[in-house]
Length: 142
Image 1 (cartoon, helix red, strand yellow):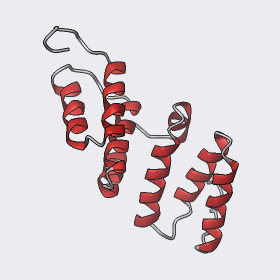
Image 2 (image 1 turned 30 degrees about the vertical axis):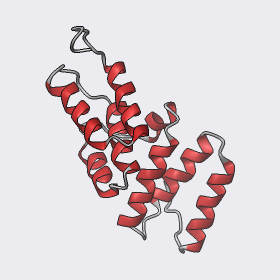
Image 3 (image 1 turned 90 degrees about the vertical axis):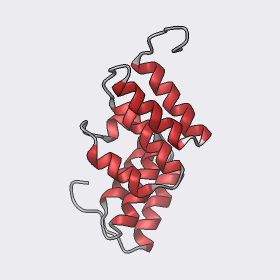
């Protein structure tokens, strides 16, 4: 694209970052994200951050994934992930939270609700069983 002097859009970078996530190209994905911001002046959207979290999460860098989620200048929410059916990202984020805060019911509730929202009832039931097995009770309001 650079050779052809084609100006990428925010959608172009969503595709590039998703491709990096699925190909396991962690460094390339991080480089593309930085290029998007610094070279092309494209302001990252939630979808870009979600792809970046997916990139590092798939590579097993769960703490880095959580750091990204916690440092996002945009508020991540279940609705955004649900609109894009990014259940895999929600699973990675929830599992990272479960490791960092094993007594918290929040990641279980997020994951359960995500599975329920997309009709994955077997997975939702499995999350409930995990909660019971770990003696986690859902906090009111979650």
